[in-house]
Length: 352
Image 1 (cartoon, rainbow, N blue to C red):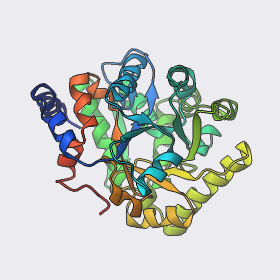
Image 2: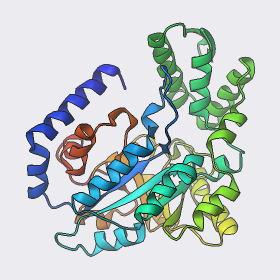
Image 3: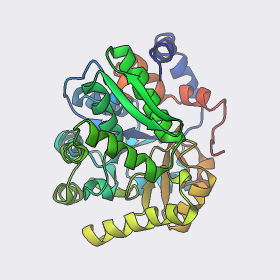
């Protein structure tokens, strides 16, 4: 997302907050609650070039978010309870669910202690290949490549392309070019291969990056032992499922649940689609999640929960805690559902 677009969204959210428009809307709407989406919670100082910074919130802001929901009379519930309340709505009892994607180490070390102190339940969706170190956090490897070089050579179908990485502005432009090419112009297997090749060429160790960021199985077992924690499935290799053939997509979903069951002793009934936007998860994937017997599956499509979602429990929206909006004047309106309703062009249910 461009700086200009980010600033525009920030101004819109701040306007809703200061005028009270979001709170007026919330009094009129009939939403049941929302599912909050987090990735990283840590206080590591950001880099000047930080293209994945939207995935991180500080522990302080994380706790402020939780307290705000409590103050606004949301009840924090498990995903099991959320599914039940979607199917059997309770009037005037709004709820919120805390979820984390991927299985980052800071979920255990920094987020879990806050949730335990506040006695708030939460779900961690685990990508088993990242935990087992057979897959890489490739999008972070690309970030390292661009940050540490002044120029990069990327092979494309049209031949090699030289990318300027000398200034911060140039680095962001080059990062977007690489990510767009890898996400749209090559398949998932080729995507990973090309990232590994570039890392080898420029002496970046993607395995070390993954090892530093992700929980291992001992850490996953530790967080799974927390009575407040629910472990959900998140595929094996973290692919954009819609870009896979149907059989491969189903295997990613089913086998990730089987690996978690074999390791932790309990089969997950909740699932999160990697990336989760429209081009990564659509009607086919929603149906696959149902066939895989997941009770719920969450996307990254913005939205709050309504009674109509009872027919679409494998296509649930979430509210993203975006690291680019770590001010309550930006995040507070998101609790109302008005910004996500606008993003969905007025629709309560967005599954198309």
